[in-house]
Image (cartoon, rainbow, N blue to C red; front, side, top):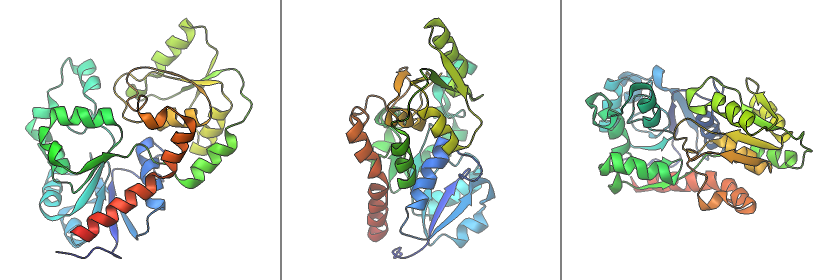
Length: 291
């Protein structure tokens, strides 16, 4: 038994925000930035059993871990106390069964022995943080053992500085056009959004490939957002950012957080998002005390 209070915490992830400003990395960065504890950041691809053993007496937070080798996964499951943040669907080799079905015709990944370790990472977690309620329910349908775990929906997480910056931009005069996120990522379905805009005769701009804060500024200049992902997207922060900036939203059924209560009202959404880091760290402290 270890007393983790006032100890360092390991944050494990495939990438951090200095390498990629994707949704998972930005959420992780907001959590790390708000931590009341010292954080040691380790990339999945840099972690082996020797390094994991060196830090085995610390509490871990595990984000994306697709680059983690199986031998190290087994060591973590058997020897580490940790909490997981699940951003997508790691029981699937493509991290999304809809994409798997589109590209391969079927998805039976949840019964694939090679992916069982990913499920066991979650099953053995001291606490699971989901991105949306629909994601949580789908996971439970695929991996019933998760029902016994302690867990809650966290959603995407924003730093105070980011929320303040978005508030400053919220009343920017718009250019009458709709923004479409310009990316080659299959899930984001840029071509589908372009097709929708053209069919609906909606003027649009493609925006992508720029720094995060610059992107927020560009988004604030637009009347609305068109985002129609090709498959389930657990909690796309792009949609949250657009809502906070008072943009009109054109979404499809695959935006999984769009029906949740906190997202339906602007004031409630701001209060909810402002409190997520406290909710997270209060629970982590509780877990560390109880171990």
